Image (cartoon, rainbow, N blue to C red; front, side, top):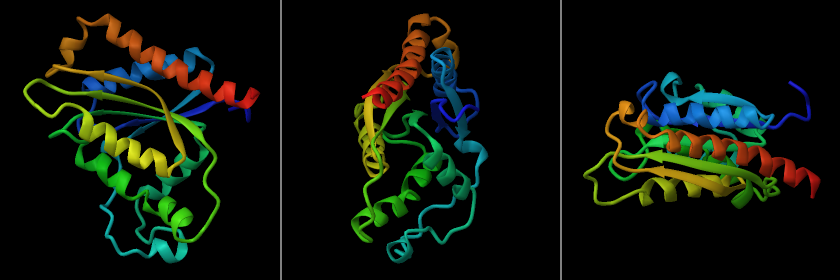
Amino acid sequence: MSPDAVRVLCIAGSPRRHGASELLLDACIEGVEGAGGTADKLVVAELDIAPCRGCNACSDTGVCTVRDDMDDVYRRIDLADAILVASPVFFASVPAGLKALYDRCQPYWARVYVLGHPRPARRPAAMLFVRGGGDPYGFDGATLTTRSVFAVLGLDVVGQVLIDDVDNPSELLEQPETFELARQLGSKLVAEVLQGRDS
């Protein structure tokens, strides 16, 4: 990969492979690559990520004491020029595996707000959430939780796609416009990174 290439970390947050949110994430990846970027697809369901223990050790060192697949996730977060999260909505929030990943980003918070390290450089980010029908609480729990961790990582949300009333991935095949929205979201992230480099 060229050192000048735009690297977008594309996080699949569903515990189930190849569901609706991952199908749309793959469309986002098409948009990233079509715009000249490089997509780094991270599938949470394939990772061993323990929950945050709340031990506060990272407030002393800036580093998590738990050794598992988050070590690689930290590396990939740090290498990314932009980050995209795609996930289903579970009980108005994100699935447990994705929430564990979010909570394990506590060291980034501790470095800035406890240890006084410089704030991270600003980077663009985007969200894609899919939910079924019947939940009266919408997307707010998922989007606000994601925005919270994005803020800690120095990410500015530049776009989102929120898809309602999809209970089966096959239903998406009848919505080609939804896949186009996802592709546009991916290409927008690359454009935002390139614009930031030119400014």
